[in-house]
Image (cartoon, rainbow, N blue to C red):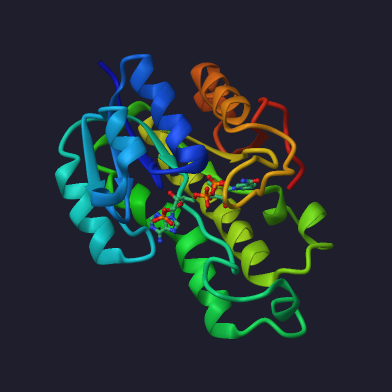
Length: 229
Ligand SMILES: NC(=O)c1ccc[n+]([C@@H]2O[C@H](COP(=O)([O-])OP(=O)(O)OC[C@H]3O[C@@H](n4cnc5c(N)ncnc54)[C@H](OP(=O)(O)O)[C@@H]3O)[C@@H](O)[C@H]2O)c1
């Protein structure tokens, strides 16, 4: 049985990734901020539901100590937006964005992938895969027109974390990839987004099935096609 770790597994894309991994027989360690309120996740009966705030280094370290076995797949999915942190879009363009808010987003959405991955480095072995759920907004091509500096910068940091992890972990045989999951109908993506969580999660997991070490450091769309940096 392969062990899979998913962060932000209680709703949205993370919940659907958890559902599919459990259905195919993975032993899933599901991280979320409030396990007591994760009723949909609980109904899926993952191996463990563990408290995890990816923006809090102490929480990340406690989480990783409980995941005390070889991890075949780590999905760094947890992420947030400026609206979740109480700000409006018209307050967060590059000419206005508060520095503290921008740094918060960078820590939660960007550096978290480094914190979680390195805290699990003893559990990742040759053949393991790490998938970072980034966004097209972290691309220099797409993000330049997006009037939300904190989110764009945070996902650009996640993209840099991805290529640096890929470089550092290649010798250990661990492959790392960044996925733009699509514009997905979740609380974050909204109801008029392009694709369902099912389509996004199916594409990401199918792509991971065949993802090779030689491809490590790639930036892909959910359907496996290459995304421009
Ligand atoms: N939906 C889209 O169109 C879209 C597009 C591009 C990229 N993405 C990325 O895809 C990922 C999943 O997004 P989604 O659409 O599924 O969003 P969502 O429905 O808002 O779910 C976000 C998940 O992340 C968790 N989370 C937020 N902050 C966290 C923290 N500090 N520690 C641990 N967990 C935290 C949330 O937990 P709580 O329930 O505790 O808040 C929730 O489980 C995110 O990284 C997002 O940036 C989404």
